[in-house]
Amino acid sequence: MLDVRELTTSYGAVTALDRLTFSAPRGKITAVLGANGAGKTTLLRTLSGLVRPTHGSAELEGADLVRTPTEAMSGLGLAHVPEGRGVITELTVEENLRLGGLGRSARSQAAPLDRVFTLFPVLSDRRNAIAHVLSGGERQMLVIGRALMATPKILLLDEPSLGLAPRVVGQIFDLLRSLVESDGLTVLLVEQNARSALSIADFGVVLNLGRLVVHDEAAVLAADEKLRHAYLGF
Ligand code: ATP
Image (cartoon, rainbow, N blue to C red; front, side, top):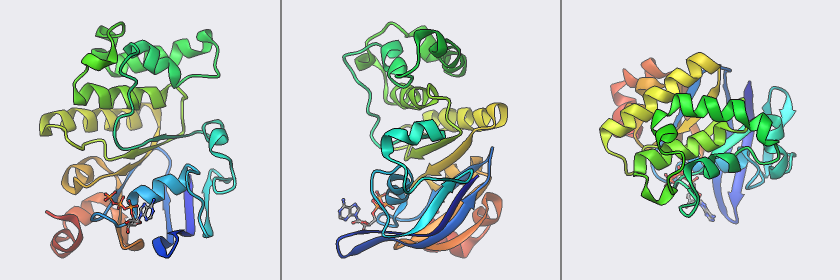
């Protein structure tokens, strides 16, 4: 599904990703873990074309991501939810969602909008509310829902748990799990919260200083005490 080969991205003299190679299978959650500065955000930014790698390749079902302009990414089936919940607080919940389906007619937005409202009943209940009134967890649901409006094949999620109460993180992660199982979506989940991420992920990729430390099944990583202490913080 997603094949990353020797991917290398630098910011001037800083090599943030260093010959990273891994693949993320279709219909599975792959967690991307590692300490601050490991290169996790840079990986997502490189995959979605926000920064250009100096070396290597990344392909989504054989389509070259590295040479595709950012604005064409959604056509390839890639959606990126950056850290920080970029909700437009002056617009309603539904208007925010429709922004994710821009370029589609109102009619062809109907099915994805229904799907998002089924997945997130709290957004359906508040569809006409100004997004400003939403809690942190609801805003996170809204930005995930907005990305789903483009009916992506792969969702890149950057730190969805940031600043949320454990119960809310649990709700969002459970939803992700059911999305993957029901819709066959592929997810690349960047997280500081390694314990929670591994509890719902199928696979995990651990980075350190831009390099791959290990790539394995999530359960294998979660059971590796040395790895947990050295790189995962639990
Ligand atoms: P965090 O969780 O702190 O965001 P991360 O694993 O996502 O960490 P990145 O943000 O990808 O890591 O950063 C990787 C390295 O690249 C770090 O050394 C960081 O200082 C550097 N870096 C990131 N963005 C830039 C930038 N725009 N300009 C220069 N250096 C950068």
